[in-house]
Image 1: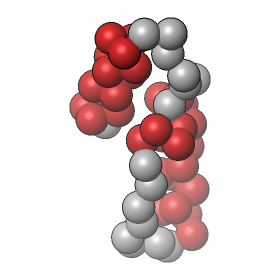
Image 2: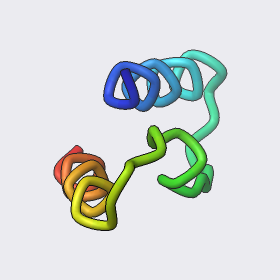
Image 3: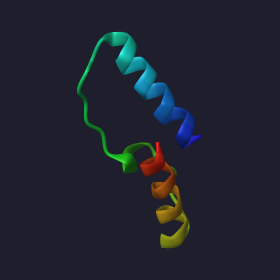
Length: 48
């Protein structure tokens, strides 16, 4: 779900004509039960 949100956000900003923006990946990432699961999600975000 976080991956879809991130892609949607990038598409939305592009449609608005915004060429620069900043967001924190933790703002859109799901909460994890362990640090390992959180880090795994963060790694997927970095690959995007």
